[in-house]
Image (cartoon, protein in one colour):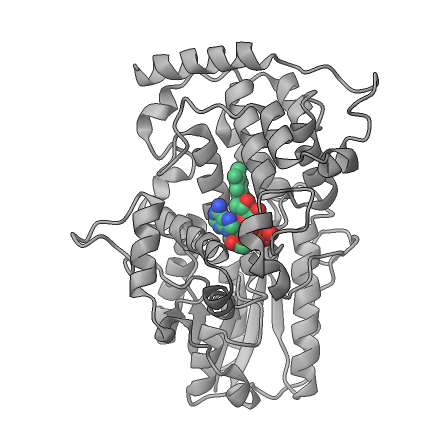
Length: 431
Ligand code: FAD
């Protein structure tokens, strides 16, 4: 008899809630993972860097488990097929996993829990990917917050060492089930192509974070942690990171609180997937011009800071936060293209793509989200560039032709676009 620990966005063997609880129970633990066809089949790019990343991380975990005489069991198919297989292959007593707040994940987990229940197998789930979830930080009247600043204030009041404590997985890791190695499917087995694999380091650069509040807004300097990918897939623990942030830099801690905030919003207001948080924003008449959208995607708008951002994204899977705000604002406000188009494009290319944060960021830029930028604020991309890339390091790196005749002319004039978007928003919002 064994217990299963189902890994999803918590791909590590340290400070992992479900794994810790599984190891504490009386049966040996088989760590399992599903390469989920439902998710993989939706990815158009067969070189998807996220798939390469996950695969590499699973191999690392496997190497460590093999040294202990244990193995990770990876299944390619749907989660239901995986559990049908595992429950016949092993004598399973209990299944342990961590919470996932996305609508698809919630549905998947309900289905799996139902399946296991019929077989008399208990399904245990734990909080792991955030510090506070669901109703843990709410207003005094019991309602969820929809504005960040009071949420973050309350978050800090509720915080205690208890919530930051690491789970001592290492002490119990020997309780993993001993069995011969199970081979991990190759990238080609799961329908993808092996690709280049350069990923940001999994380490918090503490000297950098000490200056985070001064450097984080400048895309030409290395001023942010670049840990988004690792937080997304749980290759680092949010508790360990928040412990360090709490002593190192409050501005950095606030960014981690934004992450909790958007997960909380997604949990309480799942309609944000596909719809504006503020319903009246769905009345906006978007122009949705396909060829203008392509110019934006390809970094050919004629606004250097916008083009640099899009080219950085296309080439590396990363874009600096300041530039995410500028490019998003440009698409929605200057081109009057539906924020959902931009959201989908980022979802396809960002290494750190996360439904909650990406949706929150896009709705913030469109003005349609909770605690969003006011609708009448239209970033001026030229002024943004002068302010945040004064020395032009960032622009020169990504748009080397920007001060030559080869560079495309601006596709819209700022003044015209500003007037046009204000009229369109005013009409929809009846202001
Ligand atoms: P740092 O500045 O070092 O911050 C540390 C961590 O805090 C980040 O890795 C991230 O996990 C979290 N964080 C920081 N800012 C935010 C924020 N505003 N909202 C939520 N979490 C935050 N972040 C994502 O993780 N995934 C996305 O898909 C995503 N899409 C975005 C789309 C738009 C339009 C905008 C404006 C922002 C988006 N962000 C997203 C938020 C932010 O831009 C990235 O988290 C950040 O740029 C990642 O770089 P970093 O790891 O160096 O972050």
